[in-house]
Length: 257
Image (cartoon, rainbow, N blue to C red; front, side, top):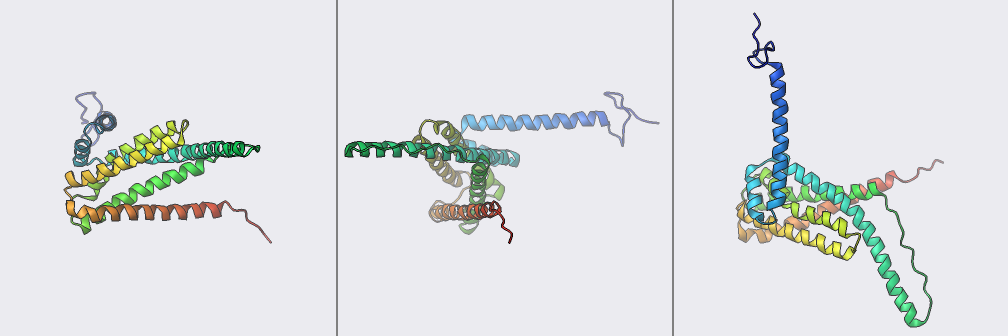
């Protein structure tokens, strides 16, 4: 004799109600999505007021989906920033150059025809380059931090904890890069200052988190951090050169003889 669910009356399959089980799975998925959304809002709100406490909270929580979402946002913003800032620098430098040459021409009593600064850059190529560069930077930074700070120089923390720490700290350069995209329409110089400020804050907070959250030894960070940062940049640049070379050769016309 078939048994039925006490809640909805559906016949049980292997002792479980298929109808209620599906609803439970959907409810759990919605709750997870809501938790991730609330966590993102909490980080954006509190990391500016209590940075180390916020990083510590989510490092100890160890939510990899949250860390991957933060890094994914950073990668997308990095790609957008590369595209918009390249356009901003090209136009800004063109205007500055025209202004300088016009002033020189006026002082010498000669005429000067302004240089045309209108140029459309391909969105996909620049966006992809910026996104890959950001991915390489964070990827190598996480792995090399674990290698130098955590293994060679005897720091504590798992790879998951290093990933969470750097992911939460990445909010600083991500937010300031997003602001820089907007200010790029005003001044490429201001955008550069904002972007560099985000990098400085990110490095300071990451090092501080290594000390206070992951309990790295302070006297050894003076060796570990420079090695990590230098090798991160070197490795990321090598990756970008390889990718650029692949794109360049693949876009070259093929001649048949």
